[in-house]
Length: 162
Image 1 (tube, rainbow, N blue to C red):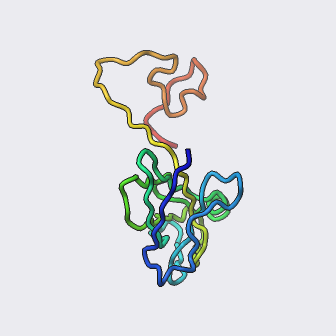
Image 2 (image 1 turned 30 degrees about the horizontal axis):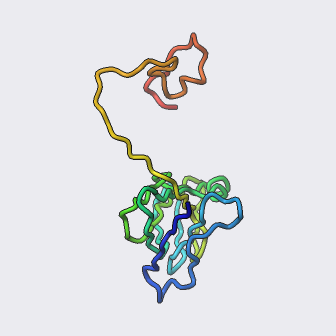
């Protein structure tokens, strides 16, 4: 089944030069998203900035758009997304904006047209829910936060994070 994503430029007269989301290779899962900034934006270490993309999207019912960081920006510069992955719901029609965070040690400059994130379209499952008094038991049961990587005789992790 083929789905159709409808895009609308939010500021067509200003952002006609910004490419719409697109797959950069045949095997890519995510479409690259470009920055529709008017002037370069310097993101200081530890700083969060909301970057416009210049487009809105109509995600078909039963799907979501997941906004994810680009691995090259993350590994080379420490640039990530605050809420990763971010979700664009099927009923949202506003401009897609990307909450960039600089986790690196140096300022990072975002230029107009830079590829800053990627968007993956994924199906959404909406199950019915039921409140129960107990859940079925498993070998893992309530073990979490690294539990499956520990030996069976190890103590469960404390509430402290490293």
